[in-house]
Image (cartoon, rainbow, N blue to C red; front, side, top):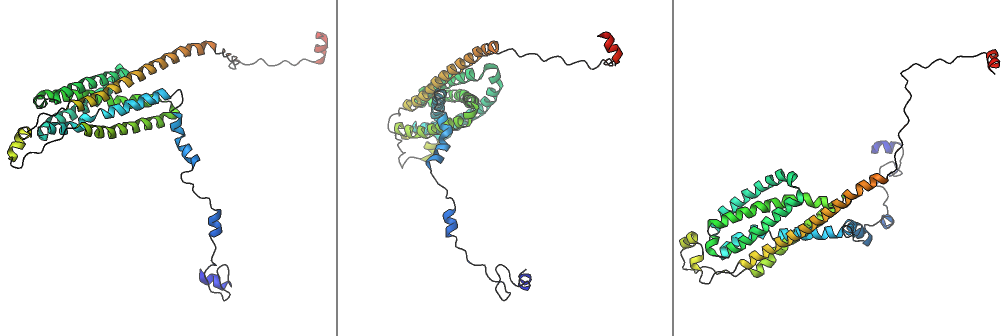
Length: 321
C-alpha cells in the first residue's frame, strides 16, 4: 500500500519525495476539553438511582414497606438457632459431635417442609399458611429456650424432636415469604420493594451474632492435665468447674425475633384483607356507573341475492308523476 501511495506522488501522510512518512502530530488537548466528562456522584444521578426507593415511602406504600422490612429483619434475626446450636452445646459442656444427629434430622425435615408448603399453599392461602408457620416457629423456639437451659434436657432425645419440629415450621416460613412479599407491592415498585426487604433480612442476619456475643457466657477451657478421651466421650461437662451457664437469655432473644415477625405478618395480613375487600366493593360500583355500550348495527345479509334495479323510461316517469 505504501508503494502505491508513493507511485501516485504523495497523499496524506506522504513526503515530497514520494516516501511514506508519519502523520502529523495532533494536539488532543482541545478534544479532551470538549469531551464530556463522566460526573461520578452527581446529585441528579444519585437522585435518579434512589427514585424507586423513594417511591416505596409514599403514603400508600409506607405501611407495607415498614411491615415487610420489619418482618424479614426479625425472621432472619430469630433464625440464630441454626448457627448457634453447636456453640450453645459447647457452652453447656456437651461435645459438638452430639449435635450432628439433631442438625442432620433438622436439615432433612426443613427440605421436606419446602415441598409441603408448595403442596398446601393453594388450599390454605398464603397468609393463613404464613401465620400458622410463624406461630409454630414461635412456639418451638420457646420450647428450645427451655430445653437448652438444662444440660440434661439438651443432651436428651427431647432436643432432637423439638429441633426437628422447629425446622418443620421454619422451613415453611421462608418459601411462603417469597410468595407474599412480591405480591404486596405494585408492579412498578416490586423490584425495589423486594430488594429493600431483602437488604433488611441481611441486616438482621448481621445484627444477630453481634447481639448474641454480648449475652454469650464465657467458656472455660479444660485443664491441661485432662485426658482427651474423657473430653471426647463425655464432652466438657466433667471438666468445667463452674455452674451451668444461663442460655435461656439467648433463646429468649431468638423467640422475641419470631414474636415480632408474627406480629408484623398479622398486621400485613389484616391490611391485605382490607385492601382486597375494598377492591371487591369497588368492582360492582364501577360496573353500574359505566355507560352502556351501544350494540353494533347488524350487518346486512349478503347471502340473499339483491333484486336488480329496473330502469324506467321517460314516458313512464311522466305518467307516474
